[in-house]
Image (tube, protein in one colour):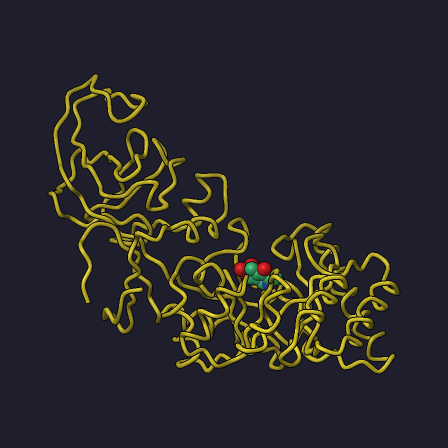
Length: 385
Ligand SMILES: *Cc1c(COP(=O)(O)O)cnc(C)c1O
């Protein structure tokens, strides 16, 4: 297994397993894990991540965002249940049947289209309920209408309803207003379920928890917890402590390409946005925004070189950055840690997100295709994704 030294994401499967176990231990015993591996496992490399979860933890439920991701899992020997959380072209109904993939029913008219296109049997679906996110799902503002719509889905010949679910939009908040909103969302899905059951419909697997919901809400009754961000060791909301232990799964490292001394009044980089106030030592590093390292870190971000925190100077380029290494021992070829911990210095994807005004999710999902994912287990490199 080989990659050329430049920039790489190191994916630590032991930490992945640690996070899944730690999260599972905090759930009610009758809530199972559904591991959310959409967007290439939040940028971590879905092949190694999903295989590890299936083989090491016997995970039986996976969630993805679309049919291409679902097929990729099947082709990666994932045999458990796969739920597509988002839209699939109804014309793909038979593909869903062939690959034994469960589709989220985004609303009643979608269900009818899916039903119309299915010719090879029944498409398994989970009915999505919109309890307050206002994205996809049967609107639940009026519960009776929602139940009526859901019941019509049960009558469609070529669909098989295997579950119902909803998505919480503020479960990662501790404000009383948001906590009340989450409670309202949960009471809506519970009420829909109750009424469907009263009318004799089997609601199957009923679920509403995401990462945040599993750790912050009183979670009785959700058959699954759709574990995403915490699986990868990041915060649903960086401003709020997570009451379980977790470890970052991704480390992002790069390489020093050149070291030089510059005089005071020297400009650095595109746009001349940095001018040295004094004589400095500067290292050039082989990472840029084309790797998904945000340009918003220009003159703002920090990296760790040989155990020292160093400031980025000048604008982040497409393929390179410059860092202030004044007073630090460093040579071309040395490792640069962009996300990770060395010598007690630590930078997380959430820290980078804070500097960029976004969330950790966007940082790891944004690490681009040209960055190899080095898969690590028991401190050994076991593959490259
Ligand atoms: C992405 C997603 C999740 C996982 O959310 P996290 O905050 O990463 O745990 C769960 N459910 C749905 C519907 C999603 O789209």
